[in-house]
Amino acid sequence: MQFRRKQEAFTIHGKRGKPNRRVRLEEIARNCGVSVSTASRALAGTGGVKDELRAKIVETALALGYVNPTSAAGRRIILATSSVAMIDHQRNQFTYHVLDGLNERAEALGIELVTRAVATPEDEAQLLAEGEADASVAGCLFLTLDDAQVLTRSGGFSKPIVLINGDDPAMRHSSVTPCNRSAARLAADHLLDLGHRRILFLMHPGRRTIERRFEGWRDALRARGIEDINDLVVTVDDWLPELASRAIADRLEQRGADFTAVLTAGDSLAYGAMLAIQQAGYLVPEDFSVVGMDDLPLSGFSDPPLTTMHIPMRHIGSAALSLLLDDLGVTRLPARRVELACWLVERASTAPARADR
Image 1 (cartoon, helix red, strand yellow):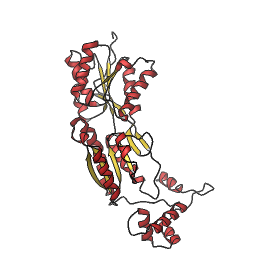
Image 2 (cartoon, one colour):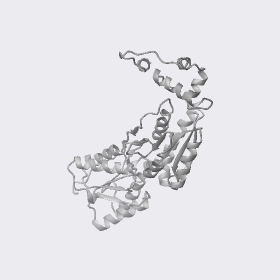
Image 3 (tube, rainbow, N blue to C red):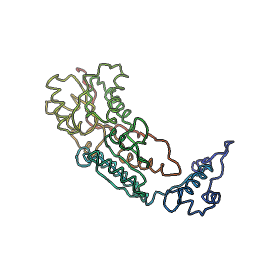
Image 4 (tube, one colour):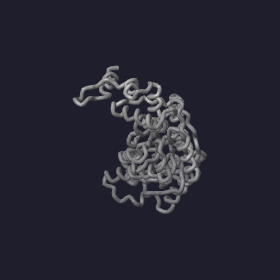
């Protein structure tokens, strides 16, 4: 309660740095010569107010420093998600938990989420056109869509857009992701602290979020003086465990046990890596340590249970909705990039590197 009083006292400051009283909606209405209900509709962006009068009310609110407590209840938000991510079992697990957090917060606020699966560029263009034309749509959330395509087609969209599990390098749109770079570095540091030096990084390249995970792995190795890392990167064409299993099996067959640990860019790849190691006659973690990233529910029941980085998937969805709602006030805020901290969940798939290796 004490913190709340201090926070409220410094909401609006005068020129001398002393807290001013809050500006009330009644004051804005009185300055504009309109009713309180008219001022409220104008600031909320709802109908029934002429454009010239709305502009005057908004300008007055800005001049007075009014903080608009916009009600989100009754608004509609379009949630566009990759159709592949929705139907593919491995990727769907991540998407499901993000959607769970997003839906929970939307329900609490009385917001309607309109979910659309996007498979083609035409789907994206049609979705944006419908959202622009529908006055009840407050904005759009894009979940795990191809970043470059979304950014190309969303340039003329006038309503807020927030990217979930993606980012805009030009900072035109706000975004929410796990802190992928620091998460991968923490995972690699865990293996390095156990004495591992030859740590493979197994990834499905393409999206910027996964490139950040690669960079975190690279940062950790370079910080320990390991510069020659090119031969430690293994790539696959999808997130399927069987592709990861094949890649690690091929590596062992062609080059032998020239590594002691594997860090994967996703848990599903870690499952395949452990299977390949075991089928080749080795043990996890006695011969090879394996670390994943995501902390999917299955990871606690794999054989052995997987050490992994916990990604706060539910919180990602909730934070994305908060970002979008922040833009529904009198003025649009500058684009923000929010990264959520991740943490290591240590299980049985990691152990100290063997002294003879």
